[in-house]
Length: 337
Image 1: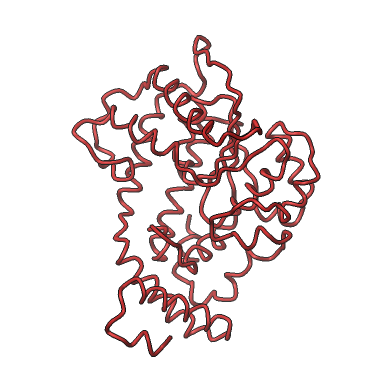
Image 2: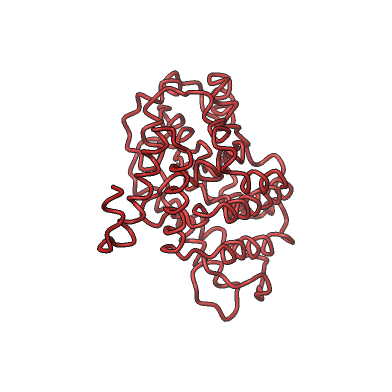
């Protein structure tokens, strides 16, 4: 691999993959300096390749906050929904927070079906939000800055009904007999207000985990396809985590008692108790299969696909401590939040 990496014929993508593969090898050999030499270089090249804009991501959150800041936290009594046979459960939070594990647990229940990271809601809302922003034709991930003019932040009942109709119609395409559909598009944390307005019967599970464990796990993984743009730079990771944390605080204040915080560390140490509380929140009866989630053969398409085939293990949130001297900028940044 070292020989290939010296070649001038490698594409940027191949060079990135070799760096992460070498980092993985040196980690197993317990050669920390070499491990971080190639891990840092792989992340540097990946950041360059993705050309991610942290500012635009933060601007999206600012615009959503602006829309909901003056909006009532509950639906008007006259706003009546047609009852749906589908009851959605949204798992939200940061990558590497345990969302795949929780989806696997819930989808092992006889009345629930996991659909993975489908991104349906994000696509629907991209179209809706454009109606309230002047002179902008870019998608939701590249919205203008916080000074953008919101034409009307009192989104109509008809708009929320449209969100409800479009999303449930898309979910119905899965043609499953289970009534509870689990959507683990974790970046839906940005749109919790829209969810609670359009789906008053929905359940929202927010995964919480030690910030250092989350950010370290993101940084060391070479995510496929579009990657995780903020994950290839320690400074970006801290800034993004700060924005995410502030957004979740905003939602908790705006919609008290409407979001269920599930602590990953508690789940790994008190498995049965935490699963029981989770099922109660989701209004699902106890099912022993939820304790045997690792036997669930459903397809899993995330970086946690191998872990969820195993029983819950403890201690993963402490893994960053082994590399503390190499992670000082990240640890210092997160400790100041």
